[in-house]
Length: 206
Image 1: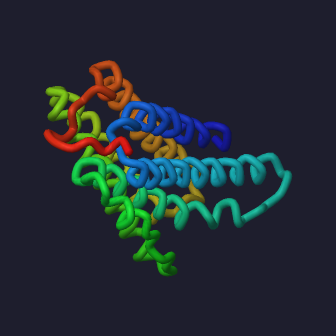
Image 2: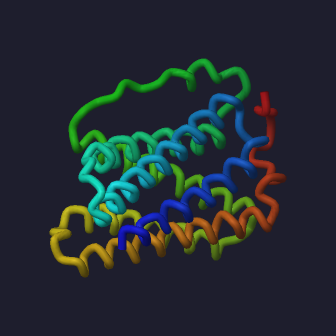
């Protein structure tokens, strides 16, 4: 199971790389920086937790900081990625200074829960908007299902993982969610995402 934990991380990483490549010309430097840093945070957090499980399962060590960093780092990662995606839709040239302000890091579970939920919602909302612009309504259902899987993961995280079947349920749910995300992103790439005219006016490739 510890090895399988790397699968959703890899699926998300591939989807994030595709989005970075396809949307690079659609984003200003500030929005691309927010989105790319956010997705990198998410990948690193997921990879660190998967590595922790592997090291623990192999009896090498119990290095809990790898697991403890997962929630706060991934939460802020989703927040940055979500803001970057939203800014891509709303941003106008010459506004990078406002986007360069990094929000302070807070402590407290509810703050990170809020960041993760809001960030994920922003990412998926923008993906659905892009689906509308590409005239691919079927992909909206794909992304909505992927988002519901992410919300289910949040619910499952509150349950008792002492039972192995709970771990497998969470693992399968995560793989399905990230697999759908990758499928949707790959389909948008095939349908010409990089050449999509996101805004009617303005050029923000500075």
